Length: 355
Length: 129
Image 1 (cartoon, rainbow over the protein chains, first blue to last red):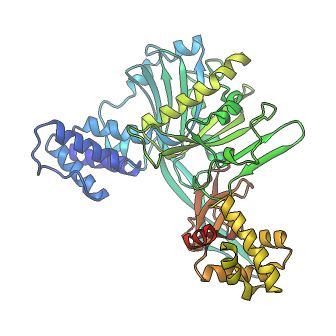
Image 2: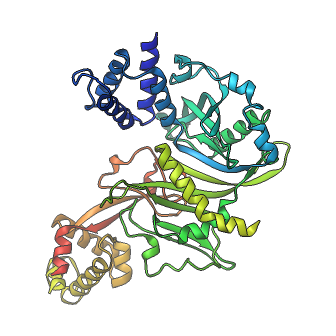
């Protein structure tokens, strides 16, 4: 049974873009314990790594808990929309371990096929405490409708569009830092063809799912990162931008590199760029963050984020403004935390001035 | 002079070749001197040189066939924020793509694709003299 669960958990790691991290775990296990060189592989294709991890687990070198922890790490970071809040005093109380006791009891005692399978049958909501962070996690099914181009047709007398249902596994979460009160709500993109509407709806449904325990905005106040958008754009140390769009009382101004990705020089280095002035406002920022490297590299790694101010209409309690931080690709916890920390640090003074 | 070498390549494709080929060559050289990742198309050239776009398209295709330019297909953000992805072949674009310009996810639509040309190493060597 344990081996079957291990296989499902390993598949979850691979499906969440964690092949290299699984490989790193195998390398670490092999180098730090008395494991025979031939016990399992630490290189090869995705399938080879999956087989090696299965073997390492069967031989007792990697526990199921450790594999599950890696699966959690892979699917909890990146490929999601994040909204940052500050817990009020009542929010801190409501997110304490004592208040969340019923949800903490819902946490499965050990990894199961039902918990880590690709298509969950039911939605689970549970909490867990990890060192100084409290997590409330929702795992459940989600679906979108995708246009089926092969079956859709148009003739001179008739046209028909076919839609195919895509099912997936959604992992949404609230992360509450007990010491600072800083709280993140992370909504899983689930599908490559996800839409802003899908994410908006899931954000609201997650707030609804949390509402027995904690409520926005009484218990969680959105952090107005948008107040620091101009400061974020002015920060040149570790960022890259290919497009900038801003407005003043008279005009809207967008400058965009014609080349895709990070191929062309930063748009802020163009001699025609003039959007540094404080008189410009921004409702969104598209920006790449240079990730810290152990050694200086000629080819820096970047994590892309799109930041946007948005008004969210809460059922029965008015509307709030939030800053949506969109991280479209999977990333490591360190990478996501680095970017979120940079955002808070840079926008912090502007937020403090306004309050 | 590098512009003269480029002008010689362009001359058979342009009307009033003596005058226009050198003008076109000087303009192209200037563009790639200022930005080696720049993209050229017939509309830009037609505006700058006051020549007909079809003639200039033919000249660009000629430079591409000679290895001095390379075709770039740009999938443009439908929200008008720039280029989402580039490819040499239209079939290489995915059906959906994250957009790093507007933060949305777009479905591929061939109407969002534009055609332009980038300088090859041969072109950069030519204009660098």
